[in-house]
Image (cartoon, rainbow, N blue to C red; front, side, top):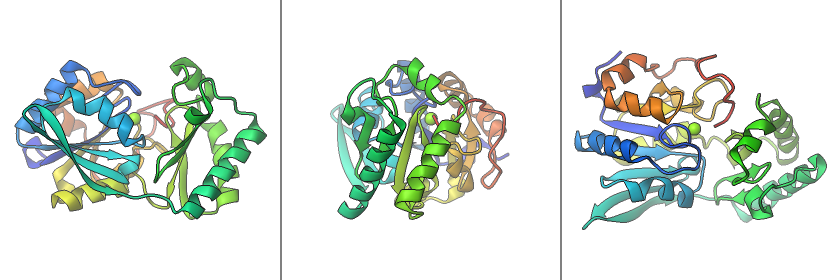
Length: 273
Ligand SMILES: [Mg+2]
């Protein structure tokens, strides 16, 4: 365990780590993140979701500089404030080629057909093309949370769907569970580890400078790749994150050193939030 003072930056997952899934930052969380930044640390948010979603969840509620990594870091911006208004600078935005997009969307549409997946909201809400990430939300991204949680509680249903997708599109992509009822397809190797490495490069930081917070660090979790790169704190939800950001000595005491195996059993029933 290293003292909090040695960390120069915090990188946090968003959904169910700093916010309830798809909801905005609470006033308490925003104030606490403000204190971390005013204490001299950089703060970045990383998510599988789109820039439009994550900037709406985070940026209006903060008044301190921060960085946003959407689609696992493939769309990356930095936000500063001038006269109280956010000023956004794009750092990079990568995307699939048209041929890759057609291949993936075609395979997903056929999977939806074969499995009879019906969106509870709209077709656009079920298959989302996020540039460098295509997401299948089985019931629609904005379907009721309860229905989404009941769709695939142990994650096994989506593992079968992932196998079908990979057999069609080949191994050149990362296909993994995201959210409670969705599957994310990204270019090969683009996960939160990849995004955190881009953060390190952009900020000229070493991996040892960063402490990561995530609710889904268990095996197969969408935060698990972070553990390959930086020290990580496994949280049970936004209240837990808030308590640890307010008591960083407790956070570093709970941190898993980079390179540790994913914790098993600490985040039960959370295959892909
Ligand atoms: Mg999460």
